[in-house]
Image (cartoon, rainbow over the protein chains, first blue to last red):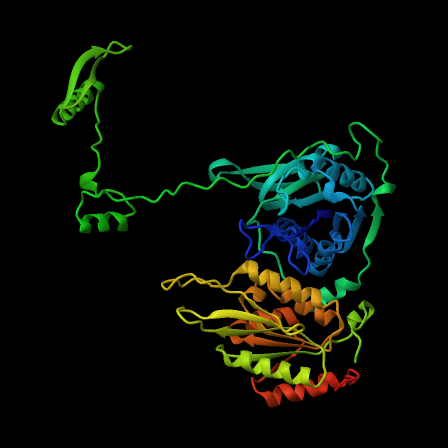
Amino acid sequence: MKIVVLVKTVTVPVILPGAAPPVVGATAAGPTALINPLDELALEEALRIKDETPDSSVTALSVGGAEAEVGLRRGLALGADKAVHLVSGETAAWDSWATAMALAQALRRIAFDLVLCGGESLDRAAGLVGPYLATFLEIPHVPRIAAIEARDAAALVVRRRVERGDREIIDCPLPALLSVDKGINRPRLPTFQAIARARSQVIDTLPVASLIVPPAGVGALENQVEVVRLSGPKPRRGSASRADATRAAADRRSLMMKGGAPAASERSPLLEGVSDRVLADLGRMLREQGVELETGMNGAGDATAMAVGGRS
Amino acid sequence: MSETPAKDDAERPAALAAVQHAGGGEIDRLMSRVAANLRRRGYRVGGVVQSNVMQPGQCRCDMLLEELGTGEVHQISQQLGPGSRGCRLDASLFENVVARVEASLREPLDIFIVNKFGKQEAEGRGLRQAIAEALAAGIPVLVGLNHDYAAAWRDFCGGDGDILAPDEASIGSWLESSLAAAPSPVDA
């Protein structure tokens, strides 16, 4: 299987000490550049396939300026067979659309069965390059991959995260693009010998200028997104639970130890049975609480007790 | 003064040793003395050594890192309060120092000393990359290794490197053989 892993070099945002309000910026020695953490997980997944299928190959592909080498050399140190640098000095200004368009043009020159990437980058976190790229290449895209469960030459079975902690099992034909989610694996760590070897390995370069792209319109290397404004998150309101102050200290402590859940004897009763009986029980309980009731009919013709007053 | 080898020399075996210790502040003081001696002899020393300093009115000591190349001292801990048990390392401050140390490797060095291969390094962060970069550049590297992380160290080294006892005689002997391979410093 020929696997291409998209690798982005990101810089670590550092809160500069002493700045008020805190300023996110580079260190005095320059920004710490590293491989995008989710891309490293994608690379690990590719390397695991390669470990189990020795005739597989893993190519790390990155677009950017000189900084892209950091991620690519990390990929080589971890075990990628080859690194391809799509050279452009202007990617800092590119949005996800233009980045994906450039990658799509490069991937038309590289044979692949599977493209893997991180679900989003540490710096921009847009999460759009994967879906755009799959669209441009006209291949299936499965996001939020939690596991690659099985594979053969023509298809993969993958598990992806969906809402409420559920998982979806998807039979995905190849070629395809998978965006991996955090927690999919624990990436291996390179030895220093591997890091040293990677320093001297040749990285194939492909100038963006050599790509055949339309000069304007759909398909052009032009940004489609305008960032209007960036703002920090709003402060959250504190949500600490408080025990009822009218209770004794021992009761409050007991409640807190139970996580705030009332004892079984304190829980609200569950009314069971046919509706007339339930209504009668409810009416009795409400009257015991001092609530004045009127009797009426609901839309289904059943007698319904309606609370019309508060506690007396 | 020796020149930092070019990238083409990356494949040559680099001198690497770990001074294994059981924790505590003695390794910090030992490595500081070793670094100071080397600097006095005219060697260009890079890396960091840690020292823990108790400040008046605080219940836990400050963790400080001294940049050996410049002598600058950086605080990397935060005060979490008297009842705290969590890690006091301020990752943001530590990353600042890591970036400076990695940048210092662009300058010619005779030896690179890091007195700490700990939890951060064992998990692939911290100064791990800087150690690897120094070795890749052919610079002899001396590391303080808490024995709790000996297994992670072995994985990192792939079987290479020496393990030294935490005493000046062992370290001195290793330094003599490692630095002898490089030209003598002009200002020694």
